[in-house]
Image (cartoon, rainbow, N blue to C red):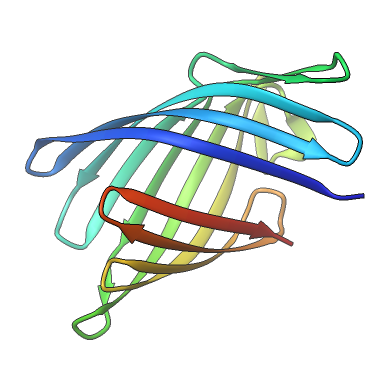
Length: 170
């Protein structure tokens, strides 16, 4: 049984002040297995605030309108909005190398209860963390620990205005 999930993002971001950036995504979602497939569209908005040249705080409201995933079997899934709040610290390791430890708090409003680290009524929250290695701000290698208590890895390449990213969850 193989399952894959693909997301194509169309993003726009703008620096509004020297230390404040705002942005938005439109994401096209495709999920599939050998037996069924699904499609959906979602919308995210976010902000980053650079406290110091090394310390950044950010927030993103994912699926702020809610996202419907429609399966070819007739099944419908609803993704509720979530608010992610996080911080990152840039550690220069030589001229071309950077390490970026990150820590995020994922807030959800869908009554997850015992499947979340903390919950109260409809609200639940989980902590996720990770580390990114950057080479010349062009090549990226990532490792992290997600809300399902599993490891994730990833890689990315930035070429001009295009960014290619791949993630694998264990």
